[in-house]
Length: 260
Length: 260
DNA sequence: ATAGCGCAAATTGCATACAATACCCAAATC
DNA sequence: GATTTGGGTATTGTATGCAATTTGCGCTAT
Image (cartoon, rainbow over all chains, first blue to last red; front, side, top):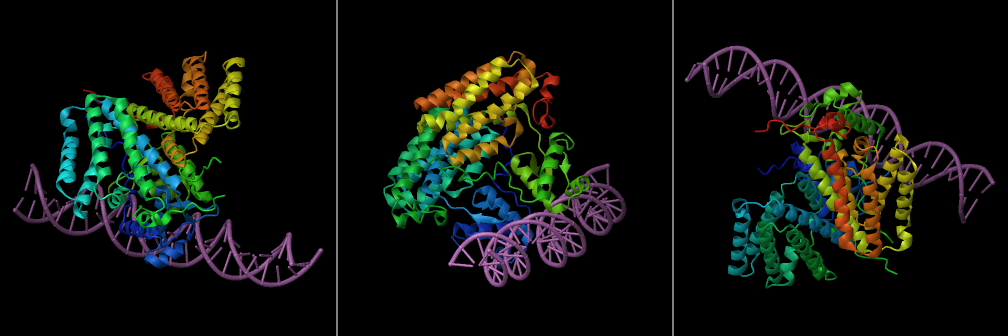
């Protein structure tokens, strides 16, 4: 009934088809995210060949994939350079994620899903409640929460039943700091009592309620506001270097320099 | 002041860096859109090599680009297959474009651009008025309108000053039937008196007005509604095969078959 | 001293040989 | 007769040599 997957997850999974390509993609992304290739530095194919011990062909493929994911820019004369990101870029990405998830929530609501269809989300809500209330702050509980959070957002997207929305969101979230879980780690460190997580959970509940009632506009604005929580967590970490280290892709961040 | 381009137009221009890749991409896309490779058919590399007289390397690059553009899907065992699209897919793509352009309009309004910044849009509005009122329906006038329409939508995106929005919209519009100009041709054929174009122009005016007044919510809903015009034009053509031929990418359309 | 020109080195783009893998059909066995 | 297994074929994945382009440096001339 819920026709989906039509648009292919090829954007989400960059669909590397062989072992060498997979290895090259994973290792290279890891190297970039860890700062081994600083932003602004040119990434030469032969350089990567030397570091990974893989021949140029699969490495070129991986470079193109990383370009589509947003980590690399192409140079006019050919070749790639590592992108850098400003805080404004992250704000921007989070906002667009909010717009898209808002659209997903609206479409989910307008489809008026049956209780049976909503059951998986309800289950996530309840399981999250247990995690938040039973367990005291622990790394394990946090990881459990992260998994549940991811599941919630995936189920929301499923309910929207929109291949194009799926494709667009996957594209946006290929940037690590645009994912729904991007700042959970930070928020847990800044606020041991998980206050923000409780707020997030309340928002999840409201979104599901709005969807169940078919209240599209409400669902949309709630989902948008929900994305703002990530911005808030980011702003909390702003300026505190010991926290900014936990921002995904922190190595690609350029601190705001050259202010008048 | 309007920081832009940060996110790279690499998604818009798939950034082929050499002549062979460009040729392969353009010719292959042309072949697919013209129906030379019917939907569902596997596109073998050697087959394309035979048809285009270009070696496998640039052809592989072109194939992956076309996959990212949405025309091809990857097969589990490797290789590509031509995608097909349903009317529902087109509706979906148009809706998401509406969502994104709505977000663009809102952000433009919330930035409260100065009259100087809005001048280019005002100029487009006036020039479009001239085209719509002076000229009687002619192919030349229509082409002029198409150019102006494209300019309007590009300027709107510029005003939003959001790299991520730019990237996402480019991604969505890589599918030809998701572009703002996709159905202008059809509408002109179905309704010689350009009624719909007048409506579109009125909507353009309202959007600019809302932006100028800083009315974000109004600008957003207007832009969304504006995208619905494309849907309406598509629905007008629905079922009339002599019109559906003019839908961009018509060769990739699968008519709704196997209904219960 | 500086600007412009030209050559050399480095780097990407292209082509192709070779390897690995998936697919298909046929044959044999249960 | 159905199922499974084997091999052969087709197709994609990988590596690398060669060509073309770009970049940067040094030399020269003004």
